Length: 516
Image (cartoon, helix red, strand yellow):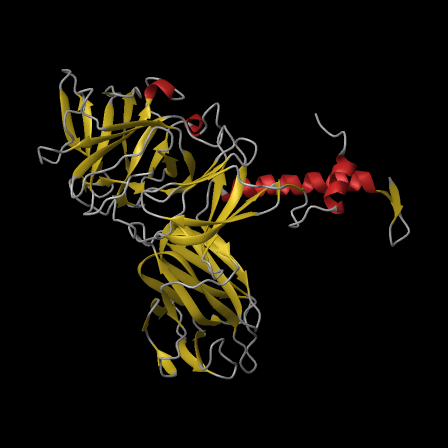
């Protein structure tokens, strides 16, 4: 098929369509690889609201050395010598009368507790003959003030919304102007701050990975339902206490390092890592140790899981850390007793490891100690089994280990082909976005979704390549999985424009017969 361009040049429409389609496909694959493994933050261009907001209208106009607000503390970014000001019109605020800006100084924004999502309205401030900035660099830092990532936002003299959702909680942000003749001149208004609420549902054990912590060996032989796990050479454990009204544990997430890249890729499920052993033990003696870990009947719950994974950051020893997560769907969930201490074992399955009889995984720690110290079970040179505290070599002290038990879980299926990535989101019934994430279908084409939201009723949206967006209403309750069977997903939206029409047919027509 040939055509004449507006310049009078003949071109092959079929070849162009095929080239464009392949280019788009390549960009999509590159984009997915960028999003799924790293995922330090995700830009959110749709305005949202948080429990904490600030429009600066309650502050008197003037110069401030520091400003304590409902969304955190603002300071001039040293070593600059300018001034931080609450300003009124002109130029106009987004929500009149006031907004915050830095006059010849950039700003830092410190959160009272780690943030999982923040946003607001930003603009370049143009006053007199001072050329305004054309963009801003936004630097993100964790609770140890270690650098996580940066985002570059183009600015104009009109207010524009910019928001971010974080996979690694953020404790401080730097806002640095670019393109002007001096620092600052970035305006902020109507800011939103969502503190991380990892335990907001029922306070089931959750200890987030910290960069200040290293990792400890946790390898066992092997994952056997109803059996025990022999240390190869060490198995790590950490404790948690169920609350007064516990919910069933539906999923688990943890952090760790690998000593071989192949440990991150299961041969039959490339979107998942190789198999891990998850076991729960009681602490009936109250001695801050798991009970009879080598007794085949001691573990009250055992699961062999192949988790999803993504890159999380760099630990205190300079090693890459990965975030793992998996559901307990399939053979029953774990229902804890109220006000009861349990121990969790998370270990590499030596039998399924990429290199048997070698350490390919270490469980990463956290500097936020809770409950009993984490321990390792090991066999000494005389064959004696012993426990020793998990040790933070970076801070020369014992440490806890990083894991979170989950109680909100959605399974959708089967919507499409196996091992297929999709974008998922939740919004309130009035349309306010509350969560965005990624999901990958399993071997049976079922999607597992692990949203970090409070219980409630939401609109779930699933976007998968080649399909129209699927939407349905879901009610999320702690410990109660939401199962959506045989969803009415419509195939055919090949160009992703939200409809199935002639343009999609042309994609097929221009590429008909293509293949290996």
